[in-house]
Amino acid sequence: MKKPVHNPREVAEIVAIQALGFIAGDQERLGLFLAETGIGPETLRNAASDPQFLASVLDFVMRDDATVTAFAKASELHPTNIAAARQALGDPKWERDVP
Image (cartoon, rainbow, N blue to C red; front, side, top):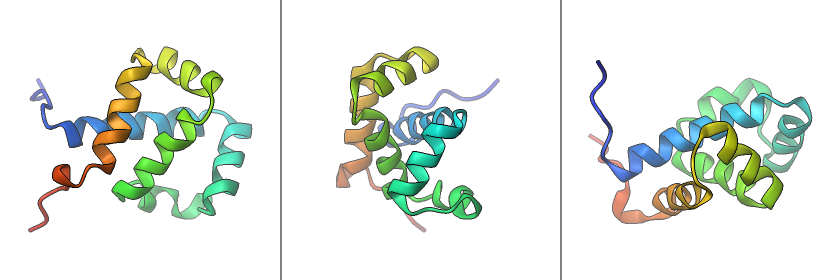
């Protein structure tokens, strides 16, 4: 059994990775996201480890009601949880400890 995650930053990263999967699940949405971010499909996996990139994923999802509603339904999260995840990714007090 996996240990539950309680760190807000880790939870936010998990939500953002779920959002990235949601985006990738729709060709049109993925194409728009790639065009807006300038990220190529070949660098998407590496970019997913960057907290700033993950924040941009949530920005993309939250930019319109239809997308955030669809992601909230798909992920079984309330839209306020998605917004809280975005806030946590942008909060410097939740920066990861880098060895």
